[in-house]
Length: 258
Ligand code: COA
Image 1 (cartoon, rainbow, N blue to C red):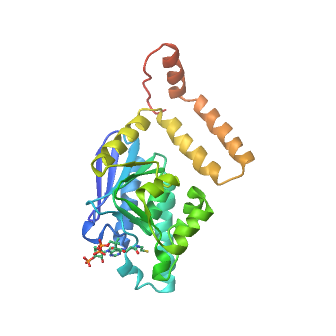
Image 2 (tube, rainbow, N blue to C red):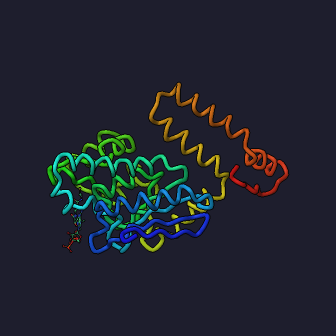
Image 3 (tube, rainbow, N blue to C red):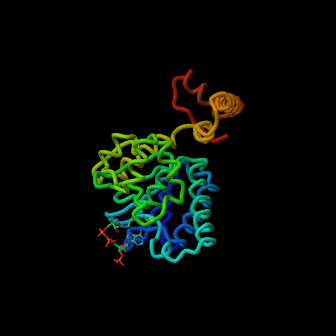
């Protein structure tokens, strides 16, 4: 892969957008390589949590590649949108947590990518925005849908309609990111959080992701039914027996992921 770096150090994996000369802008090749990286990580049982970040000290990703966008005809534009949407949806429904470590600009498609992740951390210098209307377009990778669901329609619409980015502190205040760290601490802190998650029962993590992600997209009645079904499924797992037994025996659990 040319524009994406994949490093696996089980139980963690790091995916780095690696096109720093173009502020890690998401061209078609990068989207394709990201799809490849996540397909590989999905199949790797040793990987329990993924950190997604950008190379260099300026950007997570400064958006879709505007050079490519400028050449799009309607049918190609539709395919372009659908390919990115499919990747971002796969990340949103990924069976392991994907933590976005936003190390600089997260604009346009870059913010949309971060929005598809499980949650977001940012460095103090991060700037997060949806500037599409400045280019005569609207977000095409889910930003007009995920942003209002995360921070509420009022704040989202101000971002979407002005196109102006938020500072890291402003993003923290509205819940767009969970924590803000000095730049040098961003990846170590992301790893610290990822390790805490990776130490928990893998099946429980997977089904918890599913309960929240699917549940948020349906009504409360159906979501509670889903929760009960997933809870019941976990009652059949070895890890549930081990986790509860370890607590009663006052020892650390040894989870196997089944
Ligand atoms: N697509 C393609 N190339 C991009 C890009 C994008 N989204 N964002 C930045 N780049 C390229 C620049 O063209 C430049 O390339 P060059 O050196 O070959 O000319 C390089 O990355 C560095 O960017 P530059 O604009 O010189 O950096 P800056 O520090 O002056 O400004 C930004 C940084 C993020 C404010 C500015 O690059 C920007 O506004 N980018 C576009 C953001 C955007 O609208 N994204 C939404 C797209 S839908």
